[in-house]
Length: 315
Image 1 (tube, helix red, strand yellow):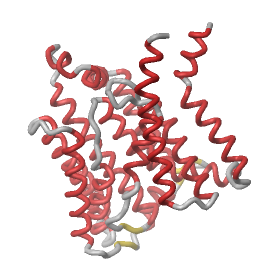
Image 2: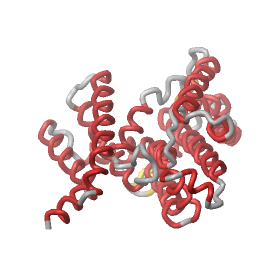
Image 3: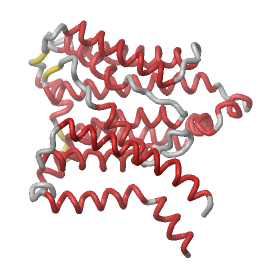
Image 4: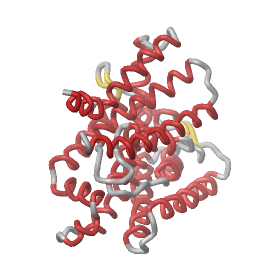
């Protein structure tokens, strides 16, 4: 009986954490549990973090990491904005997709061909791509996009925002790919043991390469949605996203050791992090202190992953 209870606690820990956080935040701010606030968090803030966190999850599942997602988002969205501000919406969207995929492809090549560690490869690319974004924008701001383009992010279908619809559609596609296809099983197998997976005949390099290209595409989509919502683009977009998406992925239960977790867990992790961020904003917590809180969550998640896995294995 004790083992069953402990097993259930580990299995549903993210859901329990989310409920506890909702209760605590509702006690600290009267505005927190209002419909306007909850709907704003779920329909306007959560979708951005969900899309890029799914990309981070894919990388971590293969025992990798992608630290260039946020800078890729910035560069692809800034280049897109250059065209979109002049009414060339299709060209702007195409440019964002190409740049996003290209940055992801370079990451994939550095990891699979140059044999660089994912942390080193993507951290280096993060600096390069963010620098290119700064260089491209030169301190300027692009704004004044067409109403049609902005409606991609500001519009809705009934009471449901377009942002939420897009993010859930992407979630459904990736969930199906990971859980119901040979490709998804290969992703998990690589995270568990890449050498054994390679010896079984799976093209591990191709799978890993594709993961980083997908990450690039997700970054581009997020960037397009972000500038559509803001009706503006600048080089600093997404500069605070990396720590948040890492925290969301890890607190959701995806293991840094690879092969364990999934985007369904990341969804819970994202909800936990966006509600915490929202609660801190409502209580006037500074952005610097918020970063510290997210950092603490990352450390706690790593500790739980390390010792929780050992403990659950002995249940």
